Image 1 (cartoon, rainbow, N blue to C red):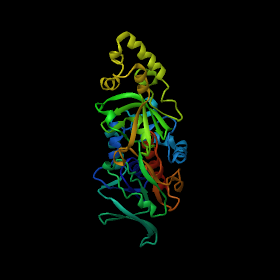
Image 2 (cartoon, rainbow, N blue to C red):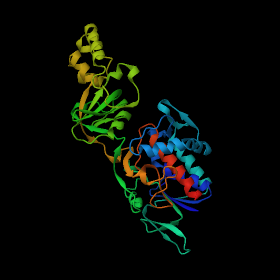
Image 3 (cartoon, helix red, strand yellow):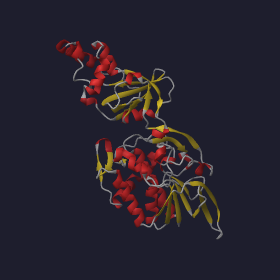
Image 4 (tube, helix red, strand yellow):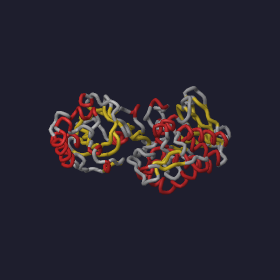
Length: 404
């Protein structure tokens, strides 16, 4: 069985290893000069491989949940078979025990080589055709932009989504499968930093602190999240901000920043909170009481000293205790948009999952053709859910393609 895999990322390398291990002749066509660039960027260079907790997916939720409920143990087994030691941290996040994404990619490439996988670089697929070869047997043909042609019995498309364009995404990859009648859900950025009005953020660039964020649109709560916020000249980032980024449309939206977790460590959770959530005023009375007590003891000029980082203290230093408490618990920033697809970690949208088999990732439109990873309309939360889906979908497709 000749299996041709388009894309050398997480799903592509997992598919290659599983197909080759099952006895197939496997060739991977990678459009860029290097494989696994998104793997290296994952988890700030630590590679958050998966999440041991309950699955958290948004678009494509039923497809991803069905796949994970039936096959998640196969993902854990796969990592064990290639000798990758794992370590679990808070929130169910699973990383390589070495804490280095580089070791994950090196392990995948090593085992691909051991099983005889041929990995070819700068081979960007331009189209896929299906027909009958000279031997009268059905055959796929992949034509690259260079004009080179590769024939195969099975084709697995793992070209990734549009997020992180600087990491080697093939912007035309969706057309490889829409040409076979597959539907495309319009791609948009997910897990992306939020751009806001800039003047209120002057002097805060690079500051990090725990917070709760609440996104509203026309006064209605859309979503909330908590965690560490990173301030920049153009807006806010960090896990909780990026979680809300996929909800941003840029239409009459405001993000409220609740800084009270700075004062109350028990509130410093990393979690997505379901609306409606009273995050706009939940701690205001507690904060006000604390500030009033400190004002009486230390004086109005110093009531914020030691409570807020210097740059934030300067923002609120001229306010009364009541005004400062309100701003600390519900600091409104007008939303302008997001940092865009090129800065997003994940793509929202992609090929319609209802047109693929969740047990094999085989196309229901064309037998022998598979779609895996981020090219499908599946996006999950921060914490390893997206890479988990990429690896598992590749494992299932690779094994199924070889088994046929």
